Length: 252
Image 1 (cartoon, rainbow, N blue to C red):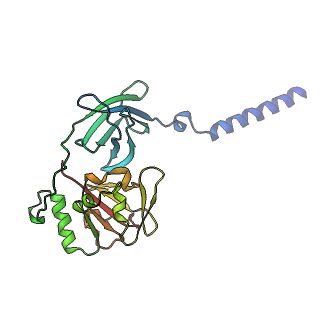
Image 2 (cartoon, rainbow, N blue to C red):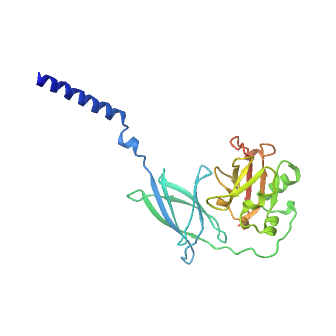
């Protein structure tokens, strides 16, 4: 009798263990492979570049963004692919786009990315006619400014005159736009109560705030649309229910 009862309890315990094991996903399913990348941003003399913006680009869109520290270092963790495309920007240096392969045995690699300094443009501002503007992006901007009354247009010359600390400060007087201090960098921009969709030089950057991706001195022009009306067809996005901001940088 005792042996029979022991056999029953053993069978029940084994069955419960099997059911518990079946309810849990396999270890490979629970643990998603991830990669890590750390690096240093430096100039051509090997000196660290502080505050460089390092952006991960996927499918022509920005997905993650960090800035280098005082030693020029940055780190990206929980990357889902072993190859990443990085865009590096810093005022006073030429922007770079680099492809990095993460091939370390522990799925971690370290890189050094060199930036080339560019001459600071501190001379007087040259005023040119839109028809003479060599940059195709700005030709389109000036054309919309002249013909599209739905947008609010802010030229780089106006930004230079006002000299704001953060680009978002240029939007204080724009109808429907509100700005408030950000817990990260500069100010948080809202259009009609929610964040707008930002495009930088024609690249869609979902979830971005202006002050996190660009500095005032880098901007040649900016367009603000507080509704779907008037948005250029190539930048129309149905997810941009809170408006759209197009930012155009100065030619390097």
